[in-house]
Length: 587
Ligand code: HEM
Image (tube, rainbow, N blue to C red; front, top):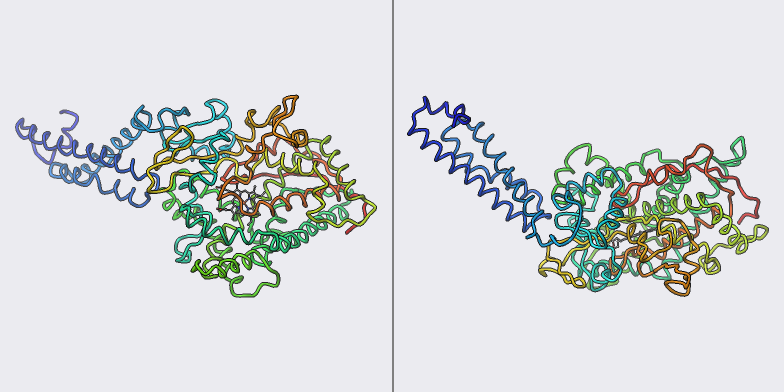
């Protein structure tokens, strides 16, 4: 009683009957507040994690009735200072107790306590960039199914993959819904983004045109564009070496690979227009893309919070800058006839020839411009740089690869590079796959969720009710000794050669291709996988053919792994190398 007396000054001197009446009305107000918190929890339980403004509207409005009741006995400020904190404490306590309780539908699945309580813990982990390592640790500690969020599981089990990612699986989860960088105000009213589409049927319809755009005939056009850019990369680095006083090029290979993959995406998507290898990143394009993807990566764990984050200037600015850049190129591209048949030529051809699609070219290009740039350049750049790192870090494998390359393309003969050549190069293939295994471009965020309106989904012997998110983590799966052993964490391309006739050998080597998912699996897997594989193999081949390479003096190899950051796709740091041009007949 004494503790609330300062709030009762408006009522005058202490008079017992007035005080009792007052306390009774206050307790009614407080009970109303607590009840409001519990009802709000019930509502959020049904609607999280897709609510956004409604979340804030409820938190702002629900305590109003109790504040109003308290206001009869105290100032508005005092009433608000009691009603709002009490409401929020009740809401958070109720949510926490429920999430940690045995009544929660995911209670049976093990996982770190903080993961069960809140997705904000995952945001914190993501911020540090080591989500992939944390996920691997969780699977090693808790097993193949781990509760990584209040309503989210991570599954590393190849037997369950068909019912998660596969044709009988689930559509994309909420993580993808807000993976667009284009702000709503600049977005075309018709959104045909493939990546953000969570409706299976609509996704299948949109995907048809993309799939057609990666069949054999268009692939020939793309391969030619890619080879030109790969040769430009080699020539640029060669010139660096020849201009250098000591005859060695001391270069950050990772940066040059970024420029190469970005320039090629410009050619592939818009028929040209990016010239980072020629001009450098003078407008900070690569930098703005790298920064722009960090915040959506944070939001992927709390999609309902992203509208708030987006309007913060320091958060939204890089995203808006990058989206503006992509929209500019998409607009220019949609108003001109491309000189060469680029990706959007093939996508629009396929879409317009499908009489049922009802989609016109401009919104299609605009909706997918940002997706195509990020999906195609960032992924290739991180995997290719990773493969180069592993080659330099493993001299015996490098020597074997060089031998294979020189056998296929003798240095004293003119070489004609084409995808047919790769058939004769099993070790090159093994090196590329081993790089993809250890450092997949999307390490831990292949998320799916039961189709909205179905109630839930049966996955093996498990039932996941609607609202549950299920995530597969290639980084953890590729290092699981059930699928890759011995030494799952070691770069050992030989494992692919040894097991080329099957999954395992008599001496206990296991290399299970059905658990290998760097391009994901099922109807929403990487639509450009064949192109990406050829791009990786061509670039590695050209590096090995044309240079003798080692880490640059002073470069600490360990810094490579330390600098890898999982922001949905893998971000990387410097890879300083010393290159010496090899004596061979040029193309
Ligand atoms: C090494 C290179 C690449 C890797 C490792 C890679 C990996 C992936 C992965 C894992 C996904 C699926 C995400 C999921 O299941 O939720 C994906 C989707 C996609 N990728 Fe790639 N990717 C690469 C290169 C490319 C390239 C060059 C393009 C060309 C534009 C591209 C275009 C796409 C598209 C459009 C999707 C969305 C597919 C859909 O939603 O149906 N990717 N990629």
